[in-house]
Length: 378
Ligand code: SF4
Ligand code: SF4
Image (tube, rainbow, N blue to C red):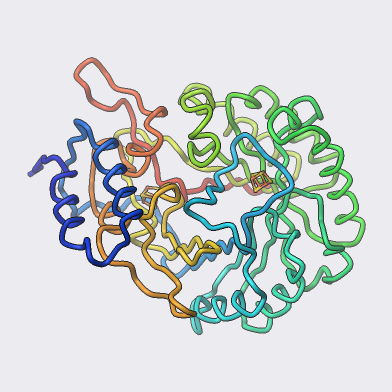
């Protein structure tokens, strides 16, 4: 049986209880989050969901933002210095946090990210240290500028992948999103990395600005020699939330092009990963935060389990000193438990522009966990 209630009421009660445990700025921000986002938002409180989508239960993915500074200003950038910090973490601090996050038994995949991680002068030391600590895989997400001679300071066998962000198959499309000159610089960087023997994958963030160009990417990847392709969906966070709300997100109909392009890329021998995004109402929904381990670590010490809440002080953990410490309620963990007909609670709160309802007010489909991926192997 379903029990509906206004979820903001209990959560604000929790917030009042914990006033002493948070600073005023965080309380104001949380209050704003729950009051402004919760208007008329009714939830189904049934918690005992059926599990349909298989996340790897023992998988641990650590997305480590070692700094937030970047040389580019992409239109969809989710970095929010107010909530993520502005500092470049010292090498010794990153090492201590990496030690706290690695797991003795379960494989931990590490992704160094920023900002632009190659702007960190100690990135090569961090890659080598992470290898020694036993991280199962190490990836660097980069914009392809490869600062600080990183391609000379690490060897291909020390790193699993450089994952390079490029949002267009040509200068015109990519530079509209990522800034003038970025296409040429990025493509030159990819070519240099490949020539040195590094494995390179490409990340393409799909939005209204480049969905029509996506079909050109399989051919582009084949020509340049990349065999791993990640298609991301635009998140309405950070810069895209401030400036262009509702203009970048794709409708379900528009999204239908993505699996088609993915299949075509796979036929060319490219391994493609893309988010599921839309679920039929009959498909079962599962929140990754309840079954897998994902840590999104920021330079100010905040650690989130879900990327969608990163514009708010909803983080599950915080590094206090060098100790990973759970935060008091209310935080994102309180939201993961909630069940709504639309699927992902955080999506409905943060980026509801991708939802659609029938005349009776029922959602036409569910939104999947943003961490749920589809994979097509060649
Ligand atoms: S999306 Fe990445 S490359 Fe672009 S501005 Fe943000 S951090 Fe820099
Ligand atoms: S995106 Fe939604 S479903 Fe996935 S972890 Fe976040 S709250 Fe859970």
